[in-house]
Amino acid sequence: MKTLVYTSLLCGSILVAWTAYQSPKAPPPSPAMSALDAERVENDRTVRAWLESQRKGQKGVEHWGKDWWVHPISLYAVSTYEIVDAPYGVTYMVRIHSATRGGQPIVRLYEIFVKEGKIMSVTPQGDKGT
Figure (cartoon, rainbow, N blue to C red):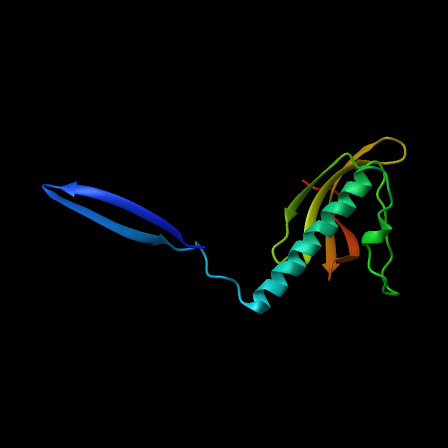
């Protein structure tokens, strides 16, 4: 979208007027880029929706893929989470603060793999998320 800017200056006894067009910050995405961007947005929404369902104590199975090898998991007593890294919008590193059934607090990093808006796997990374 171009914005018309009109400015006038008085230089000595000459009035100068001009128009300028403000160009967009980035060129419009190509159709191939926009499909990738749309998938990334869908993947982001899926991960955030699953994390929110975990925080609310729900299973969130509707966010998981239907492939035979996909095994949905749910976490116990999630209090907070933070998306640490999502470089390509397919693999997410998430720090999750939760607790064991006995009430012991846990902070752990998880790798979440998402494909076409569905979670395919959630894998814990190491013992601590720090």
